[in-house]
Length: 83
Image 1: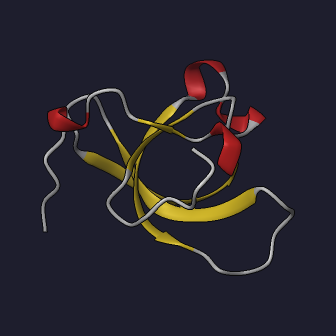
Image 2: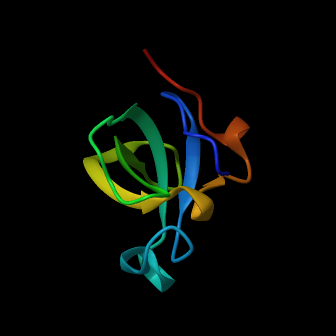
């Protein structure tokens, strides 16, 4: 994924996006907003919720990741977005 994510996107954040999410620190992340502040080329600040295996939000986070390393979550139908 090299395009900017959009609010509502469900992403798998792992070591491809940033070394801080490598290995067992991989996150399933629902995007709430994409920050427009300047960053290094190819990087972006995302605000969103970390989801557990049941799709329940467990924490709100702001993360700094490489666009080229972002991947859609494999099974978005598993998680129903609630208003």
